[in-house]
Length: 78
Image 1 (cartoon, rainbow, N blue to C red):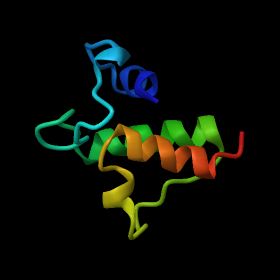
Image 2 (cartoon, rainbow, N blue to C red; image 1 turned 90 degrees about the vertical axis):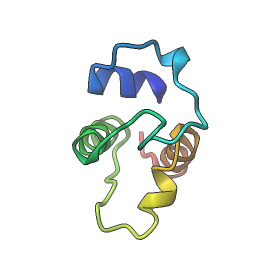
Image 3 (tube, one colour; image 1 turned 120 degrees about the vertical axis):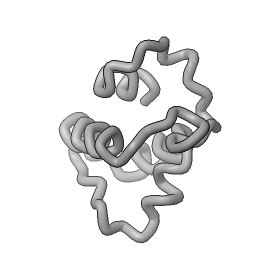
Image 4 (cartoon, rainbow, N blue to C red; image 1 turned 90 degrees about the horizontal axis):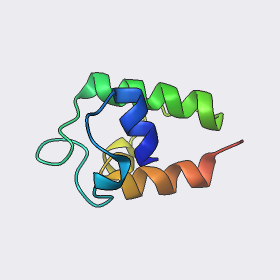
C-alpha cells in the first residue's frame, strides 16, 4: 500500500520510509483531499471496490496507512 501512495502521488520518498502509523493528513504525510481522491481511484482500479466519499467511517479508514491497508484487505475483490 505504501508503494501505491508513492506511485500514485509521485512522492519523493521510498515506500519503506512511510510510517504505517503516521497520520495521512496534517503532520504525517500531509495529504489533502485531492491526494485522497487519487489514492481512492487507484485503489478502485487495483482492488475492485469503491471508497465512497460519503462513508461515515472515512476518518477511521484514512487515519493512517495501517488502517487503510486493513480496510482494503477486508473489501478487496481481486
